[in-house]
Image (cartoon, rainbow, N blue to C red; front, side, top):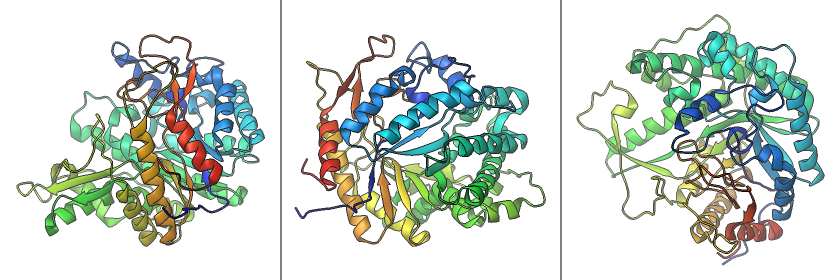
Length: 462
C-alpha cells in the first residue's frame, strides 16, 4: 500500500445532531421541536428525545473523548428550540446560548474546529402550531432571526456553518415538517414543496447575511447526496438514475451554488400538479445569497431501474424501482457497502461545481451491537472507514477539493426510525431503548482504528 497522506490542514472529524444526542428536551427553558413531537408516538417501540444518550449532561466527558480520539473538527447541530423555545420570541433563551457557549469553548480549548448546523430536523413546534412551520412564508423571517443570533454569538469561534440539514429528506417524509400524515398525498406534497421553497429563500438570506457581515466564515447546506447508478447499461435506466439524483440531491446544491431553481426540478413539480406561491424579488434573493462550500451526507449508492410501464409524466419516484445488487454487502436497514461510489460521487460534484470546497458531513455504517466484557468489536465499520477514506483520498488526487471528513457518528445516538438498535458510533453508549442504565461510554475498536488515521494523517491498514 502506498502512503496515502492527506493535506496537513485536513479536518478529520465526526458528526452528531442535537435531537439525537442531547436529551434534556425540556430543560433550562428549551421548547419542544418537531423532532421531539415526532419521536413521542414511537415510545412503545424505542426511546424518544427526552434523554437520548444524555449529551446535555455528558458533554464535557464527550469532548474529552473527542480530544483523545484526535478530532480536528466536530460537526454538530444547535437545537433551534433550545435557543428560541417557541420560535417566535424576540430575545433568545440565555440558558440555551450558555450551553452551546460552554460546548464550543471546550471544543476550541481541545483544538477541535466546530462545524455547526443551524437546524437538523428540529424546527420549534411552536411555529408549526402558530402558522404551519416551514409551509408558511413567515418561517423565513423566524429562521433568519435565529441565524442572526447564532452568527452574532458564535461566529468568533465558529468558522464553518451549515444552514439546514437534509432538506430533501424532510420534504419527502412530510411529518418531519410537522405536516399531518392523514392528509392526502397531493396536499402533503403541495405543502412540503412550498416549505422547500421557503427553506431555499431562508437559506439564501442567511448566506448573504453571513458573507456580508462575517466574511471569514464558510457557509453552505448539508445535503443528502444519493449517488444513483443505473441497474443496467440501457439508456433508459441511466436516465432514470440521473433524474432521481438530479431531483433529490443536485437540485438542492444547484440552488445553493448557482442561485437558480433548475428547470428539471420545476418539471417534476408540474408532474405532481404542484404550484409554488412566489413573490416579486424572490429570484433576486436566491441570486444574491449563495453558499461558498458544500456539506454532503454520503452513505452508499442507490441503484435503480426505469419502470417501463410507468407514466412518463408521473412523479420520479413512480417512474423507478430500486434494485438490490447481489454482489454488494448491505446493512440490515438496506444501505450498501460501495466505497468506489464515493469517489465517483465526489468526481461528479467537482464536474458540476468546479473546485467547490466539500466537507463530507456524514458517512457511516450501522450495526446492531453489544458490549462484551467492556469491548465492542466492529470490524465491518473499520472496513467501511478504511475503504471510504481510501476512495476519498483518490478523489483528492483527482483534484476534488475535499477538506473535511466527518463520519456518522461520533457516538451511538437515537436513530430516527430504529432507536438504539441501529448503532453508528465510534463510541458505544451503554443503554437500550427502554433502560437508560448509566449511559457509560465505551470506545469501540473503530475508535482506535480512526485514532491511528488521525495520528498519522494517513490511511491505515484495517
